[in-house]
Image 1 (cartoon, rainbow, N blue to C red):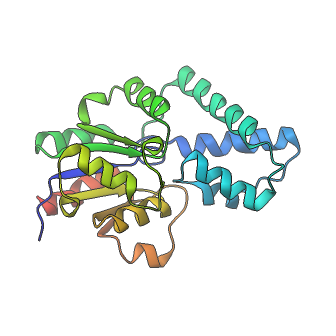
Image 2 (image 1 turned 90 degrees about the horizontal axis):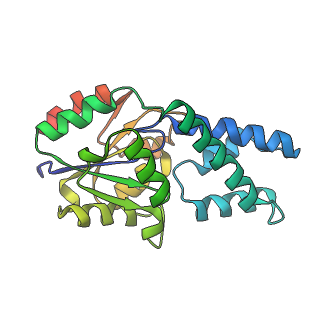
Length: 219
């Protein structure tokens, strides 16, 4: 069995409880605009970059939908809430990051979120010293569920894909990790992936504390 050298982390919905913030503000903005924006449509966008989110929404609501203004408004509302209250850390974040650092396991953040926003979030939460490398959605041609972002993260770490473990909460993120030839660990958040995706994960956890204990099996 390949040895574990690196853990690759998604960000939204995994390290930060931001998916719920985005959902809240998408709902608010759509209500104010008189637009029927369902939770199901939001969930289909989870894990995707802005370009792919735009395509999903255009396919569902038509290209007349004012996506750029809508996305800017909701993103700013999320930023304002984080500035006021701090980044909403998920349970067990510091515990799992500290544990992996103590075990000399390399760590990378691989997120569909833009570089500026992601770095700001990580630094505001005081997590930047944990990560050895980053990969952002804007740096790859194809976002999740394609493997590009995780392959870039592994490359930036100098680690082979087979020696990486991907921690993900989303359907598209898990598919991306699996397509990259990496072990995947599903961490439950807002919505569960399809059974055919879950069938291929190495393991599943209810939170990052449970994930930390599961990772001990690979060391």
